[in-house]
Length: 85
Image (tube, rainbow, N blue to C red; front, side, top):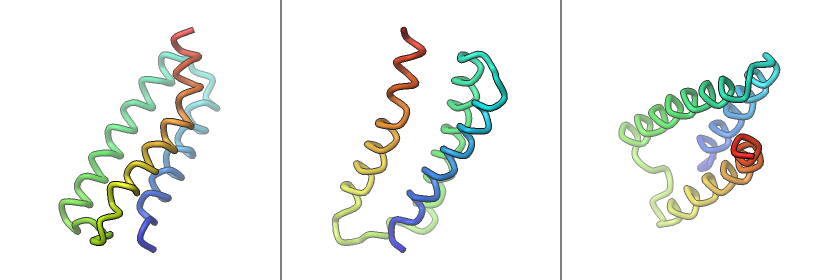
C-alpha cells in the first residue's frame, strides 16, 4: 500500500494523543509531550524516506504530503485554538 506509512503515522499520533489526554495533565504539559512525540515521529519518517526513498515515483508525492499535513492540521487546529484562547 503506497500511503500506508502516512496512515500508520496518523494512527500512531491519534493513539498517543488519546494516551496523553487520558492522563489528565495540564494542557501545557499535554502540548509539550505531543510536540516531543511529533518531533520524534517526523525524524523517523525522515529516516525512512532517506533509507527507502519516496514510494510514489509518479509525481503524486507532494499531493500525498499535502493530504497528510491537511489531515494533521484539521485534527490539531481545534486543540491549538483551545490553548491560545
